[in-house]
Amino acid sequence: MEPTYPWGGRSVWAGGSDQVMVNTMDYVAVATTGNATDFGDLRHSKSDVGGLSGYSRGLAFGGEGGTSSGYTDEIDYVTISTTGNSSYFGDMSSSKYGIAGLSNGARGVMCGGRISSITTNVMEYVTIATTGNVTDFGDMTVGRRHTDGVNNLTRGVVCGGQETSVESSNIMDYITIATTGNATDFGDLTVGRRYVGAVSSAVIGVMFGGYTGAYRNEMDYITIDTTGNAADFGDLTVSAYGVSGSGNGVRGLAGGGFTTGSNGSNVIGYITIETTGNATDFGDLTVARAQTASFAGD
Image (cartoon, rainbow, N blue to C red; front, side):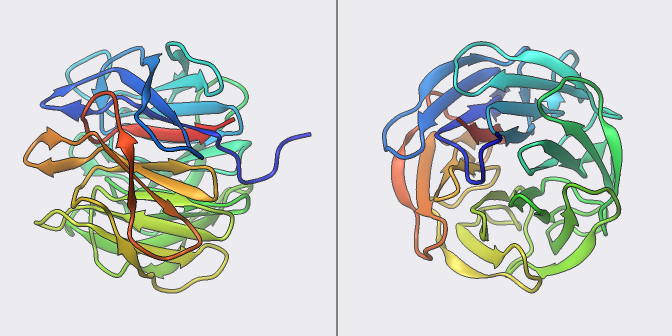
């Protein structure tokens, strides 16, 4: 029998950059506090990577770097309960970066991103427990990159990002993950921002950090199964963008990010997802960096 949501005893951060791109992966036990431990290496160093998970397997997809100096279409995977280097999963439909990941545990959906000079609205999906290339899912309401997503077992919501002509978007749209089709408007973030991070429970989605010409520490939240605008949740421990979130459905973690220029942070903060308030210090990543893939599982 498949486990029910939430799952995520262990959170993993993969790749990222701090002046240079890295292939580092590290992990923490979500229910504790403390510094991260080395997990293994991605097959290639890359940044601006998307991430999602299903029960026991984590996926890191796309990004800048990989096998060339440009962008990659490759998907890597790991078994979250073990440690070790990532393996090849399959390919997306094109090389791109700044992609949001959603999952209902069985299916993973990859949303938006930038392809060369084009910001795309394409969504595509994989069955997480198998390996192979993506299948088309549908289109977002507006093409965006540097977004993130929240989800429960039924619905996924893609939040914020950067449009072709709008640098910091407040748009949120949603899908039913088990079906295919185009996204529907959900509502607006409290502040439009790109390079946003996110984490969710079965009920609440929390979006944090980002950039609007300034580094942001705001956290917003929504009730995933409704529609409407986001409300204020509290503040991160630091103002940052490119922060990556994961958790166990009860506790949410926000790791890394750019805090000044292109200098990455090693800070991990945590929240109780269904209680509003400011984040609390959790510990440190093994390597300071931003724009990592992040995912959690058992």
